[in-house]
Length: 112
Image 1: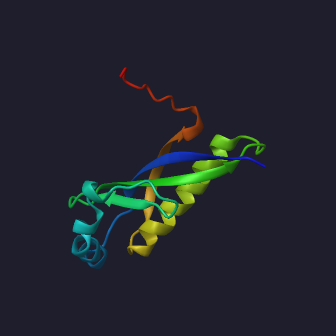
Image 2 (image 1 turned 90 degrees about the vertical axis):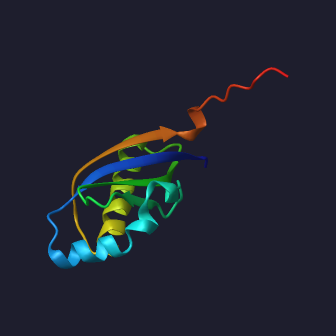
């Protein structure tokens, strides 16, 4: 059985934050800036110090014969994003996602 890999970016907003949640997020904000962004299977949460929105980048694998792969991949990515933000002490709202099947990306090679 073949598995396709998808790069997924989940965009979301933080649910309303109390002072304690804000303090915890700001304490580790430097570990979650754009320079730390990576597509991994565990995923990476990125946010700015304004604490309004976040992005989550991850790689999700889907079985080739799985029905509606895109919906399944997005659902898994959003579950991972929600768990990662909750691990930081906050909650999420208004999630939307973009996924790219890495098998369909064409690489243009420059002439030698």
